[in-house]
Length: 106
Image (cartoon, rainbow, N blue to C red; front, side, top):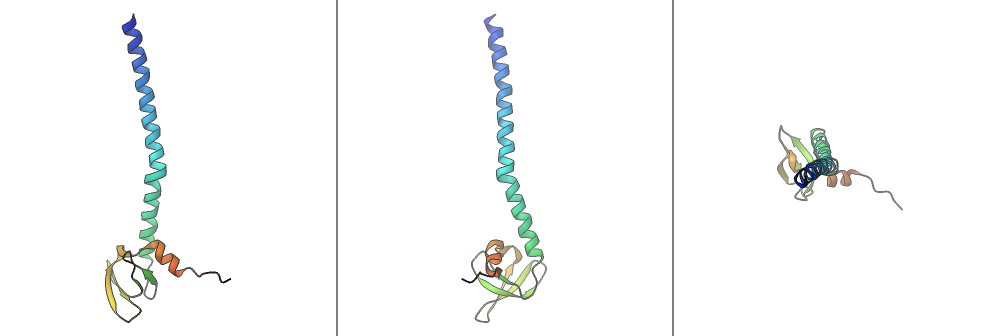
C-alpha cells in the first residue's frame, strides 16, 4: 500500500514540474526572445529605409553621412571628407536615431 501512495505522489509531482517548466519557458519567451526579435526587426527595417544623405553612426562609433548605397554595403562620408565603406549591418539603430533626433532647447 505504501508503494502505491509513493507512486501516486511522485506522478503528481512530475506534472507540477512540467507545468513549472512550461511557465518558465513562456516567461522566458515573453521577456527575452520576443523583445530581441522585435529589436532585430526594427533594425532591419531601419537599415532598409536608409537613403543617401542620412546621418548615421556605426557600431564602431563612426559618425558620418551616407554618400552611396549598394546592395549590402554603403559608403559613409566623414567630417574630414574621407569616405569609408561599411556593411549595412554596421549601423547602430539607437545611436543613429539619437543623432537625428532634435534636442529641445532650454
